[in-house]
Length: 338
Image 1: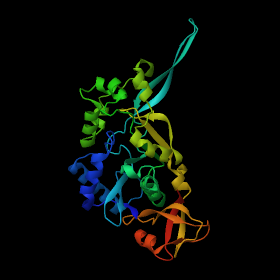
Image 2 (image 1 turned 180 degrees about the horizontal axis):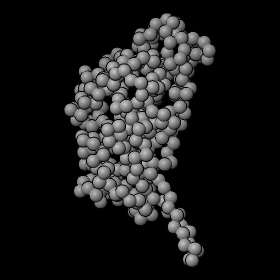
Image 3 (image 1 turned 180 degrees about the vertical axis):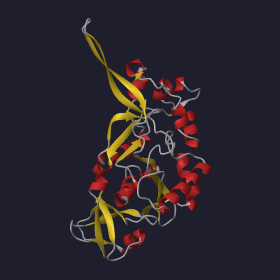
Image 4 (image 1 turned 45 degrees about the horizontal axis):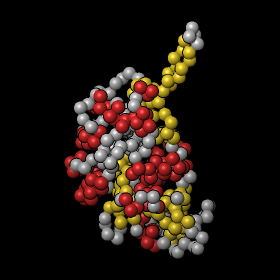
């Protein structure tokens, strides 16, 4: 059985194995033991802290095979994007150029460097092993953390964002980076993203142009790359779009990938999930898959279960599922349909 839980320092070696296979552009999963150790330590401190509003906390989850102890995925949430430094994005805007004398009225697409999304909660660090991409476990790995948000809303902002890895080729080159960022840094896209993973994106972002970038002046390949999703990030994109996230307003400053945005109160797994009392037994025949979490904090657990739950009634969990969640008869769990 695959179970989602908070990461522990004992997971470091396994987490680094996952990070080593994550695509270029996932700077929140650097293949660096020291950075990952700091990430897990910050998460452990956040789970144990008493929190009444979103601050500097970060929460890192792993997806574990309970039979073998092997990790097959991970994901995270930063309570406040840019808490200690600005969170930069390119904002899509339209400039109007007008000449009454020449009777010319043009609308021009521009990109403006901004930190509009600073302070929003940020979904990060998604990775799942390739054989599980597109499976129910992808849903658990991505949406399980949203059930955590639903159970602990005071820890998160009123809006959430997520940066989706943009287009780059098999050699690791990004048309958008080559047209924009590379003009200001003497390094290729892969090197820039690696440096950001080991240090910070902000120090590079602050060297980007503060004036608007006129999109029609960019090469065709760069324009076509804007808003494109890396094939290995498509599963994350699709899940979050079904959750109610939108793509229109912002893109990533390095690879031009879409930056998704949603009101926390409007996210499907949060608004449609329900707290339900537990009965132990065997679910009936009319089953469908649900994401189920125990709603706890440091002992948070989530999994996928085939249930025949009827709204307004208790949910029947197998003994195996209840034990994996750490709940018993009469306890409550949070669930939402896959």
